[in-house]
Image (cartoon, rainbow, N blue to C red):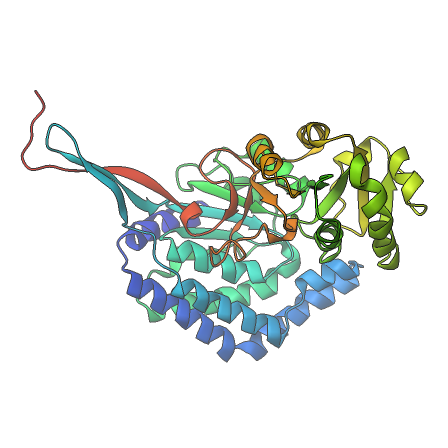
Length: 412
């Protein structure tokens, strides 16, 4: 791991001076390699899938691990999309002349070396490599042991793309061992690694947060809320409550708790409850909810803190906007929260007072995504307040430094 760190630091210095054309050539070459080696990648993935099935992994786990010709094509297209994005590196903004004559601005620069630790999903190998490279960073990728063969096969495509563009192969390194001790070393190599990005379950991220000596870009939970205000359009309220929960269950931006103003509850909750029942979504609600939705089970205090990642939803009827905001402050995870309302003043209050990385008015929480936000792609979601917050795209993988343009000025 130390040797990888040394090589990554040297590669990061080369990438910092690499031009946009070279980075884009590498990305397009990586995409071409993935297409050319489809059969090889699928063979490697079959080894991982066979091991996962022999170990008794569940269907959802196997689904996340599975590569198909279609998903490989998506990986290749994703790399080409990153190549098409504007390069943030080297941009100078805010350049202003001071009374002394000097001009002061800020230049966007790479973070340096990024360590990314993730589980199950081999597509992360290509996504993370592409985003880090375009932002001028070297990266060390440590995927889950369950995807070891798939990740190594994808890494070979990445290295070939780097060679084609004349960039150092050490710019993207994938840890080749399943030994968990490698993670312990990676998160303490602060002399070589500048940022750690964990992508995985809560248990993994909590462990890394405890043990890492390196700053992290992370989120622990996605306890996302939708609040249906009593001035919401009922049809819109029902549509958003349905989509935010049922469009996809296992994502961090899926709604886990539905809050409904008592003034609109009788009008919308029976309809929403019927939709959830038809889609086999288990409902857990307070007493007011259970009076309106016969299929709802009693909710516990713990339920409102829970990120279900499953067809289960917590529901609560609240008095008004104040009570909704108070509930989100107590039970939320500062990830994504939405209000449905026709009242502009209430919408603005919600935007100001709800302290989450994404706050949404009159739309589903499922839009909290780098692609949907126009970032092109994302490395993950951050609920931290320093450096990057919300979906982390290319700009989130950079930092800024002050630059000063002088004309011979000296300070008196």
